Image (cartoon, rainbow, N blue to C red; front, side, top):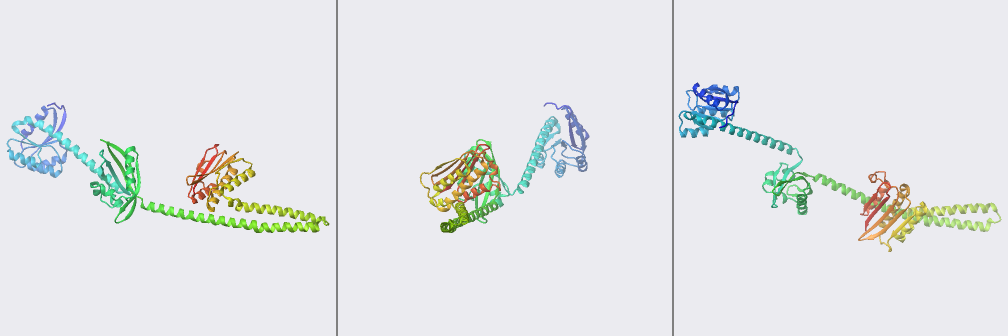
Length: 489
């Protein structure tokens, strides 16, 4: 036995003989300890000693005139103390020793064999330390579990752990009490039978659930999945599963995460989508009505006003022919009026074309060719055109919308791009028609594309959305801009 030099040992001796206590103290001193001791022989005295200070070990005689080892053990239990309790007795039977051990004594030593005493004390001190560490660990665990329970109780969802073993089986090592609110299942049910949860997943969503989980396991990427649960009492419920992933050894994978009930947000999202779709339909109807009104006004201006102006010019010609020559002043006035009528006719033609180019009636390709020529003539910017060799058959509303997108794009180029050339492309590919407008101007800052004041681009986006198409804008400072619109036929 190695000596423990100078180590203080607090010994409570429960014995009616001072000499017996001194023998114990002497034995501990020889073993290298520095004993601090007190001897008691009644319940009252022992209780006072226990209240006065902490002790490392209790060494107790079995039978005393006013006290006993059983009484001492009962007092320790009442106090809730876990101290090494060693019975030191001159005579004790085997049956009595068994009863003492059952009552809580840790060992017993016969007084005629005190060489065992110090080793027994040291062993019980070590075991008491182990028990103390275990109690502290259990208390810390209980505190941790209580803290976790308190935290998860305030989380609006179900906190969980999913474990997938190397063999491919999966389980819920942990599920919080939020499981009742999320999926109407007690946590104990989910932990005992994981399939109780997976069986709730909507049949149309199960494949995506397992695929997303498998993809997360293969790439060790965080898991994020949305899907529906089918609950008898609550109907369909949307959930979002989010979890971080880690490997636990032996090929096992563990996800720590939370499941949120996102039913309300999904319903709001659906309402927003329905509202947007309604607004889009309303916008499409408004745009269609506007184009029809433009077509009607352009036709009326061209036909009615054009005919009136033509008739006026004919009347002026008749007046000049019959009465102008002998009256020079009248002839000059007629000539001036003719010039005004010519300007009016040109204005009528220009206004009618702006409202609704008549060339649209000849088809989209012809209209785009006309628009490219008109843009080049008006701005002086060379315009290179690449269009399909054959006419692309579209209904009037779709053809008009694509033409308006081109007009707006060219207007943006003329106003903002400072370009020296423009390329226009129109082609048909696999059920899609693609319009592309490219320039070599100063480019745009893409973050500003969605600004509320970018009305031209907003109009292009809205028309594209109405057609069920996609819009792609590629640009960079000083690198020009390419606008591509793809619309299903």
